[in-house]
Image (cartoon, rainbow, N blue to C red; front, side, top):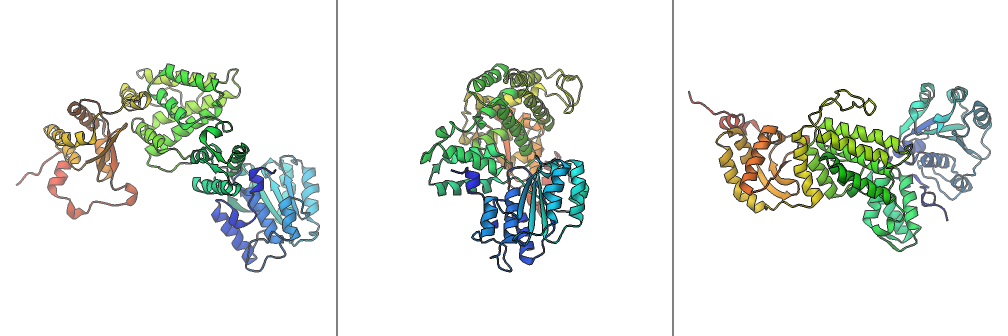
Length: 522
């Protein structure tokens, strides 16, 4: 039985997942008879470069394709031969194993001089073309400059930067992107439906997360899942096949690091190691967590990874309590330690060193001289970035401790609503402008992050998030409610909407109050 990704390899342009802009351009060229003599397909592995190259070859040489159409018939001998990989006029060359100039001359250059045996075009698909030697590139260059009319070259590569500029300049270039989450999900669900197997949504999500935008990897993983030969596959069933490194363990580890809990972090790594978890994958997932927190902090909601709503909420909570420089430090150290896992005599050691390194970093905030810069080896003593302060560590603990230890905020939204007037009254004595902003806020919910308040515009959020203002509000709110509660702002009108407050709606009293002053009558 063929593997899933081979069994379901697209045989028409309509079947291609993602790469819509490339498909549209190529099909238009084929339909209009304006094809180029050389194409360069570049992008990550497993996103459809070779598949699309074969479709181009199939479409151009299909005798049943009608004028004004681009789809091959998939019924003629030419289409079937290209599908099976044995068409004499569609020549696929693996540059990784044919790097030398003699191979290029024999398999490509000399072969190109002869007309197609039974097709309209002789199509050369050169995979991983960046692997060719410089002498091979130079030999190929002459043919690319003046190709015979019956020859079309399609070069595919994952590393376009390694190809000579003279080669690139003679090709029509298409850059393939990673397959988005929605496209991957639709494709996998279609395969499951065709195979008549019900696969749990969590399993599909996990496959997508593991595949990092590579559809071939996703289909391969799905194939391993389907090999269990079950009509209904649950998350528990999938654990027998998929490498275990779930988001919950990663986010727990991230939280332990940020609040300086060394023993808990080491215990988690020990447990994962004992369970046979791939620690290199675990470190990669941790890097994705740091990256996502950075994106969230900068207002980017979309990521390459599809996390659960609970995980997203936790990362949002952490993003509020950490600076961009601190995230850079965390990601930088994790990247370095991940590289050491493959060569370490004890695979768990680099992650254990990372746990101690980061937790000690946050437990000793007064030592500002030992944080390595992003381009320095671990252990370098210098001052590249600001070390986190006790305020950072303590504030993270306030949010994270509830998550790690299962503590819940006892105060309800109704309690907050009752205490809100008292909060305004207490703060109005010393801070009129802050009280003005709070009067515009509406408490909308309360969870492990704290009380969520809706503010009209982003500048109100920025004012509340000023360190001094935030400390005053949270301290007074804690006194009124009998427990420490954080303030989480949600903007009613996002900056991306480009909306502004109409000038006619801004009174002198409003402006004065907002800036901490008052209107004085003359």
